Length: 85
Image 1 (spheres, rainbow, N blue to C red):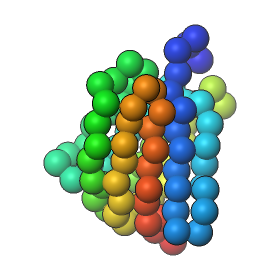
Image 2 (cartoon, one colour):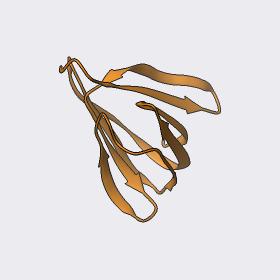
Image 3 (cartoon, rainbow, N blue to C red):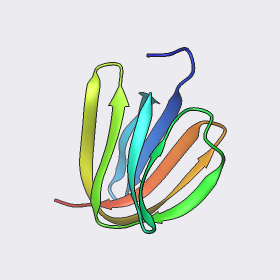
Image 4 (spheres, rainbow, N blue to C red):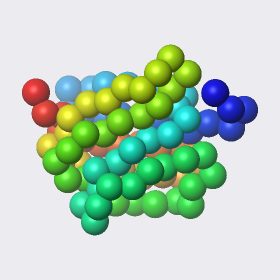
């Protein structure tokens, strides 16, 4: 992992599902899929059903989401999502 990383926080109605440093996040945004890397401009957007994926030092992981929103500021990406079961 590089010296510069993102902090990803995934919050669900049940509580925190994940929190930790990541290298990249792949987002199913309501306007289309996009990638978030360290240094990305601040953003607030909604999610659509799809796969939220992230790359960390221990490999690539992901979870299916039905809907939600995210906010990125100062390399902290907070995702509030309804996870698909």
